[in-house]
Length: 599
Image (tube, rainbow, N blue to C red; front, side):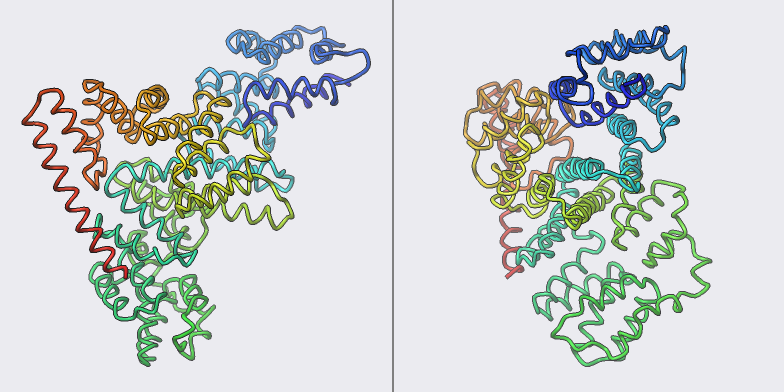
């Protein structure tokens, strides 16, 4: 075996280790030495070093060999010093640049890692190993649009492996988890989170769909498209009068809403007003053929379809006149001419707002994977973050489901498919028991994957099994001691079991990983307050409320009042208690109203 062949084998080890722990990487490396391609007669565990040395007396090969050995021993700084010397001799060498990129990543210097990984990519543009690490570097830098582009490119190649597809799915799931969690950190975001849940519940024909939409409306009455979605849900249940009322409200908010026009056309057809239904649907087709086709596919069986509706399917292009070409992107967005808007902006959005419009349009056209990149770009703009996060969470969930179906059609029964199912059931459907069942199936085959045990812990919490959640959370942390979501769920499970002292340490560690996380601040503040550390609890609870935490039931304000009272700040505590009472009563009234309207 020559030096180039050996480097290729080591690259395969690095590729397999992209999403594995370092201990597992060493096991894989030694297994290769003993049983795999490196296990040649007369060679032991140092076979890689011997192969590097065979016939390679040059200074470059010596530096590369020693650098790789230090890399394998996790001595990254020393490895970088030698590998940089090797790079001065051969600046374009793929393997040197790849190792440098990985080592800089492991030392937390993602910006420098990008430079070296880009150099490696120039040598092997389609190599999934370097592209995987490039995506990791972009993610560390929170350049999630670029990370998504890289992983989508890898999975789209003709020779893409199952691992490439699964890495993309796992990226989708990680981002979905983070984005959906961020949504719940503000009042407006919580409203969008309820709407997101309603989308999934409607897919499952769950009767709680209307309730989720009403919860969203109680928090954000002016949310775009919410009244139309509520009207559509009433239509699905045959509640015609309530649907009409919701559509009336929707029309006052946005008369250009195409889904509204479809809903009104259904009501008109049911009332035997065929001419009105036809006019509405013609207007829909003139603006978006996709929306018209979707209306035809989902037309209620109990309502007679206008006789010429089928004929309009496929004829939408003839309705789109030359006027569209004179309209700017904002007008196209307002009129919901989705296909025309995508055609106009697809080359490159000129601003974060245009990126949001493009992502919104692509999502409505069910081109979810394409929508992710512009939506990630829009999300970086503070004023657009909440709306972009809603569409992003939806697109990540849909894209993961689509990728999962593609793998299933190819006859692949990967345990990651159970992981996808578990994530969707946990994050969107809020079905704890079903999510637990899926995670357990994944855990049977992925016992060394901390993501599986973390997801299982969260699902167990949702299902009311806090003891099981503690066990699963601890198992995840044994595999990855700094895993943020495992630290958070372990702390939350301890709180649920009133083991407040035990909750403090994992929550402190979680806060070190994500200092700005509102949810962790609240949990740690609660642990401090319940374990008698009032002075430590106070700044955390106050910061949570300053950052806009949606204290729907007044729980945080009540806890803050109790802390202030124990610290002797009587007047401040009374104000906090009064606010807690107001929020609690408001939530009770809202919950009662939602329950009544949902019946």
